[in-house]
Image 1 (cartoon, rainbow, N blue to C red):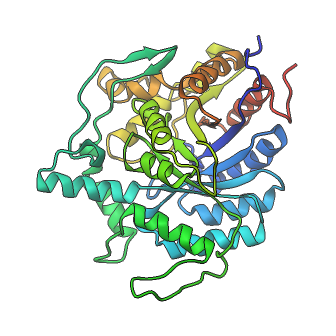
Image 2: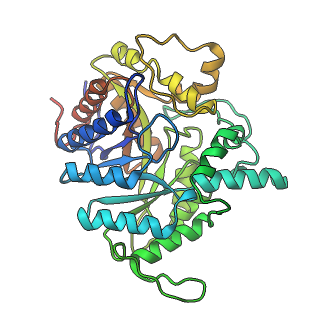
Image 3: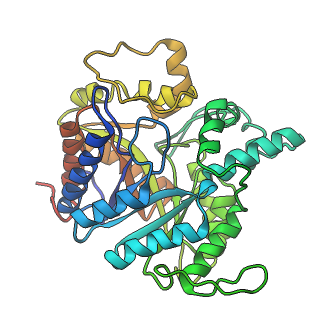
Length: 391
């Protein structure tokens, strides 16, 4: 059965370069480059990498990895989803991505995220007693899981304890100079746009011009997980927006609605443009896919428990989750799309329909690289991508 989609939206890839149990970061990076070549061949529109540090994923340096991927491919767009502005300066980001554009013109996407600022704002708000869910001082009010037009909208996961964890604090401290404080996210995004178009002035009115960077043909995106500052900023600036169903499925629809409500036409876009992410594992049949995905919950639990992403577990040797462990990650499990090609394509189409997404970006993690390749290949064929039309 082929998914019944008329003029389906494009599919793209989000890759964390996961390190599998028993493997190495070096092998994970080689796997990423291999998957990028195949994704281009199969017809995926973009290949994005995520920035994570001090965990068992190898995508800690997006600009360097994007350069390797772009050099190994010829047509697919390559980018970051997203650069964490909490420990990157606007000037450094523009110079790095300007360099990438100079070497691979017209193919580079620059996604921007608030990860660093979000934690700082959460701690500041908690210390001051401010109760503002947008900044994490108060977790969202509990509610039941709902099914909205076929899409699972799970109860929200409380993030305040995770954001305040000592391990996460140590990681953020290690990524900044002692005593450094990140500027406001809105200001950093504005500075990046000013550097790119050559209009940057500092507080004293002094011009600074980034070379490379100025006039680079880089597509700027803002990413967000809720109907908070990132969604509204992307809308006000008229930038494309990335909504993270694979990370925060409880608030994705709200984030998209907030972005569209705030949208103002700009030199970048005449109308809102939304990409929505999803976790997916595809195999020849539902049972095989469930076997491949059987340790996804263990991997998500390592993140949710504050330890950071562990090496991706081997389904052949990993015992099932306990009830308590499963409870911590249930929202991630019920919103992972697992099954035969038609099963996953149907669920992706539901996500597209409910969110009104203009594009979907899929992240697929399995223990074996060949299973991950097969997952993306089967999905591309079922979706009818240009490289692999469904039989």
